[in-house]
Length: 352
Image (cartoon, rainbow, N blue to C red; front, side, top):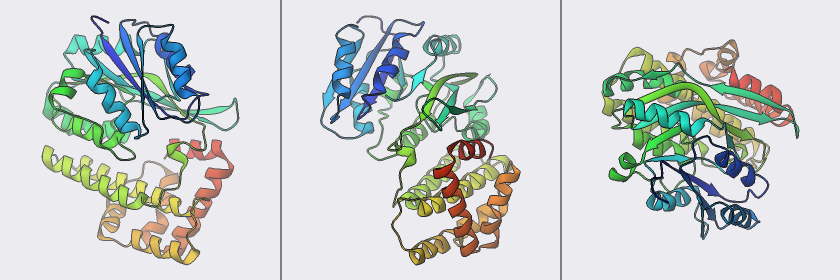
């Protein structure tokens, strides 16, 4: 296909009930000169067949069938084959508003952007048809210089706008010339985006929201218990501190953001231990929690963080007291709400 403007890349695995909707939301785009790579990552259900059925009717859709290797490898295979001026990544169980690609391309073209960042929605379903919708956005802005972007990046991080790939349009030549690929790890989105923004020069942000991230499937990545979550979060904190050191940005606002980010994720690490799928003994859980909340990094973060809501101020009291038992009990309450009242949990999380 000649003169492709956007190459859309969609890793597909075990989503036969959802992938059709994701594909149709791309077909419905007002921008029509796109190509879509559906990368069937060794699905054991009919996901690959569903993709094939759409490709048979639309020549812009290409299906790649490969052995299971995870979403990173699926995305990377398509990056190498993409011919579009821009790259866009989406998940196979979500969907996008119809003007998304056209609007983001227009912004990129008008400003010579290497990266366009948009807002997005998180749709958390608490029944088959009812959902709580959380929106994430910041005011529209075109950063005049690389330095300006770096000094204000914490504002975008703070609204979760720089962690995921699906609210962004990437200049393909920037990605390919710098050989930027998704690392072979779970939660690969974050390190990929860090590699993109590390030396980025031309960034534009729109307050418009297009992408609908769906929280519905219990087996989804965000709902699982992870035995190595704490180690992963520690690694990510190291990446963030390294990024800001590389940028030579040490403003009070950025430092406070890094500390608040750390302690908020530490709350999540503790909740991971009280997750219903965690089979550690109570004693083992208490031991882990004690280790988490008494490190020098945890003490520093809880001291300097300035929670944005009364809810988070309350959540951090056990951490400030460094009380293992209170932290454990609080986390059990969080886990109870998370599993028993999805709407309430989503509402509290959205306003933290």
